[in-house]
Structures are given as structure tokens and as C-alpha cells.
Amino acid sequence: MAEKEAQFLKDIESSSADVRFAAWRRAGEMDPQVIPALANLMASSQPGVARAAREALEAITHSVGVANSDRRRTVIRQFLTVLQNNRAETVKAQLLRQLSLIGGDETVPVAAKFLKDPKLREEAAFCLERIPGAAADAALAGAIASAPDDFKARLLAALGHRRSEVGIPHAAQAMQSSNKELAIAGAKAWGRIGKTTAAPVKLPERAGLTEWQKTELLDSQLRFAEAQAANGNAAEAIAIYKGFLDEKEEHWQCAALVGLSKIHLPEAAMAIYSKLKSRNPRVRITAIKAWRKHSEA
Image 1 (cartoon, rainbow, N blue to C red):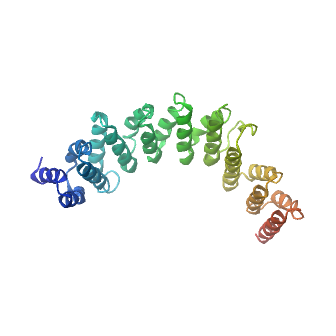
Image 2 (image 1 turned 180 degrees about the vertical axis):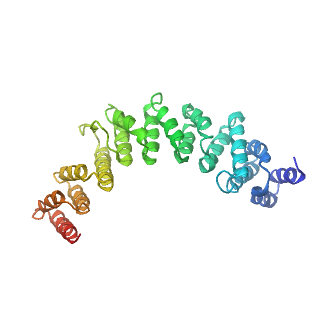
Image 3 (image 1 turned 30 degrees about the vertical axis):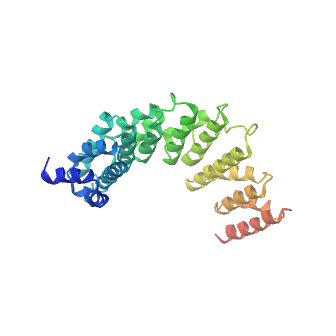
């Protein structure tokens, strides 16, 4: 190890907060070979030293530059090596967090192993959720079958946020679960992904849902309808919005009217027209505004 790196590590361990601060601030200038030593120092019994080491690792992460640079590849390789060999959970959690920022396909198989670790699975899911590409999609989807229900919901959320089509069959299956939380997690993922399937998706039954779960379910349907309209599947979107016009709560009717106002087809206009004389003043006013917007398009 070069003298500069050796002095840097010595300063990270200093009893002086000022020296430690100055050290981690220049961590981005250091050779990535300091990463294993910093990982060990993160587990220090001295809080100031542990924090300085953590800050230094973060600084190194932010120093890697553009994708596929030599420094980036070296830093990732060092992180992955330490992740597989360091025993401290706090260190592993931190490295997964850093890899979520710079990792790629090379990170996926290592991070995926931690999806089965109850103490690190959340960090692993977070890491994979932020890594672009089909490999991360496959790792998240592949972990669902063996995961407990509460973590199935987390994995579905990750696939939903990624709008990953590989999550659709898993979301559809989850929506039929007797576990209502899991069923709603499936609905939310389905709504966010926003893609149609050859076979129609069966939504969770409303019976037995809490009011909040019903809200989440309806919100997911609206999200899906919006995606259909954006993707050119206007007929599907209109059908969903028309169903919302029969909801008792005015805000759901109003949301549907707003959605219909963005679809410039006669079928959408007819649905809006049906609410122009609603007895509910808010629904009526929203319908009038939607009608005007639709007419001006």
C-alpha cells in the first residue's frame, strides 16, 4: 500500500475529529485498495472512527465517475469482495447501499444471495431495485416464490417501481392470496407496471378489505387505467373509468372524469356526458370542466 493510502487510513483512525474529517473528505482521491481496511474500521467500537470510515466509503462511491471507467469497475470489485467476506452486518448493509448507486449486472448475483437473509434482505432488495437491467428484474422475481408473505410484498413493490413486466404474473398470483396485505401489494405492483396480459387479471375481492386497502386497490386501478390511456389502449382505460363513475364516493367519480377528459374519443365524451347533471355538485362541476376540456381538444 502506498504511503498516501497508509497515512489516510491512519488519519481515519485518529482520535481527533478534525483529522478524521479531513481524511474522509479526501477519500475520493485514494486507491480503491483501501476499501477492505475501511470496511473493517466501519465495525470499530469507536463511533467516530466507524462514522469516518462509512463517510469515506461513500466518498469513494461518489468518486467513481462515468459507467465502465476503470476506477468504477475496481471499486465495485472491491465492494463485492468485501461484501462476500466481511462478517459485520452493518458493513454489508452499507456496501449494498453503495452498490445500489454504482452496481450493474456484476452486482446482481451477489446481492441476490442476501434476499434470503432476514437481516439484510431489505438492503438487498433496495440495491437490486436501483440497478437497471433484466438481470435485476429476474433476481427480484426469482426470489418471490420462496419468500415469506411480508417480503413477497416488498419484492412486488420493487418490481412495480421498476415497471418490470416480469412482475405481472407474480402480481396476478398475489392478488388472489387470502393474505389481504399481499393481495393489495400485488394490485399496487400491477397498477404501477401498467401492462396488459393475454389473460385478464382478476383483482382482489373487496370483501374483507380495510378502508385503506380498498383505497389502495382503487388507486391501483386508476393508475393502471392511466397507463392504458398513455399506451394507446383507450378502450381498456375507458372501461375502467366508467366503472369508477358508479362508485359512491365523489372523489373516485371525479378522478375518473379527469381521466376521461384526456381521452379524445366519443366513448369518453359519452361517459362524461352522463355526469353533467349529477346531483352531487362536485361531480357535476368536475364533469362540466371535463366536458369543456374534451370539447376543446
